[in-house]
Image 1 (cartoon, rainbow, N blue to C red):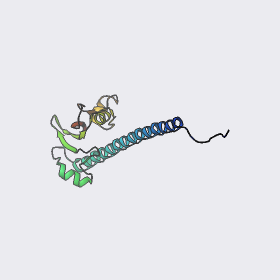
Image 2 (cartoon, rainbow, N blue to C red; image 1 turned 90 degrees about the vertical axis):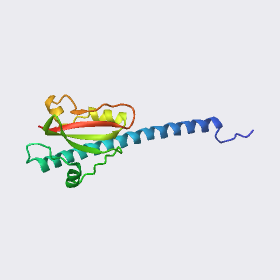
Image 3 (tube, rainbow, N blue to C red; image 1 turned 120 degrees about the vertical axis):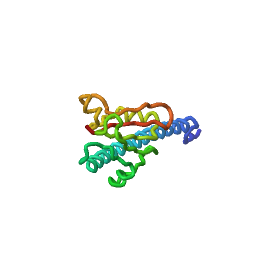
Image 4 (cartoon, one colour; image 1 turned 30 degrees about the horizontal axis):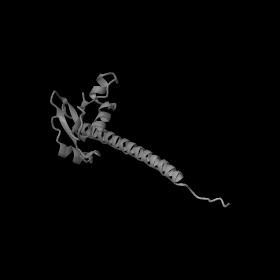
Length: 153
């Protein structure tokens, strides 16, 4: 009697199942990496915007002269964020010595991640004794969420 060599159908299905699980895991890791990269880019962009606003308007007593077009052109940062939304700069209506950086076009999970992130130089972070993130936002389902961070005195 001859012994046959080869793979059975069950062995092939098992191999395909293992390959499928590995592929699914790779997609999850790639997605996490992309989200972390976007968050890092937003952080870098906000730091650049805050430094630019302070250097351009630091000689004034307040930030009433904030003009998005002029500021973004002067600091060489695009007003588009990696999430497909925009960055917006505005004077804080409650205190002209403060300005607000708004990040728009966020989905719920990205909004939650940016709201809980520690914005170390923001008014809220400093005034809370480094216990709160310094950002605010109402994160709901959809892609219209906005995160606001206040800077200044």
